[in-house]
Image (cartoon, rainbow, N blue to C red):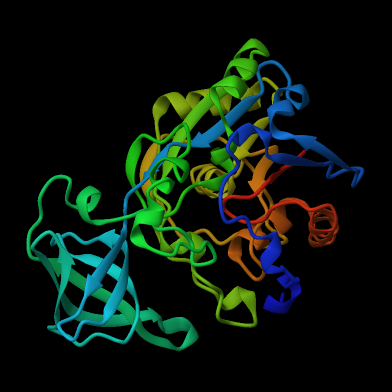
Length: 349
């Protein structure tokens, strides 16, 4: 398939810049894969559309304050977004601003310096050379990122100054966030509140938690026209014995396994065998799900509305069909839904 098959016009006005004050007041679009029917609901109504002993699987990763603002010796500013820590305690990162030089030191505040060690190819397969930097801080101490960094919001969410990120320290985390290491939020989980969890508990809907440390692999742009040529970056995940037991029990009992977000969908598909049985493991996945993929481990998907040409949109199109997703997205645009990370969501049944 072509990259252009997953394009659509997303006006800036449809991109949510802030979350709602009450998370569970976000809108929920129900999409029935069999009938193609669309229904406009609110997220707090979610329990009504699930049955007792259905299983919601959520991603409990916690976003680290991975965006650092640095100042060069010339006085120019740089914006550094950390992606992952290497075995030698350095970091791989993206840099916004005039290209640094290898060996250059910049001030990141608090008396801490950052040195740019070397530049690597961000996407060699697509001919995108350079763009990925390895850096090291002059000191590594507990709480360093908490002191220096801010939440790594996607570039389409605008903040005027580092101080403006302060509310996002809380709002860009899900209620399930436990395991630090992600550099983007599993955004389908942002809608859950204690009120919704209590309602799900009363309905006897089960919950299981897995961890996928959201990194560059999830949000990296596709730079090739033939999507089959795109290579996903590996991301670490964990599926506990308890989670695997709950998932497999739900499937064997004929109950639905609902993935809360594309990160959960990818994790469960990567951790399952051909029959859909999920095994407990700590591993990495570079699974790239596109239309034609046969899902084995999930029966329903709760997901936000994703950016044009993104791998996330391709996964959602694989779970329904490209035509159904185009229909749903156009409906959402026509009816004022809020898109992307802080936006509304869709339940595909």
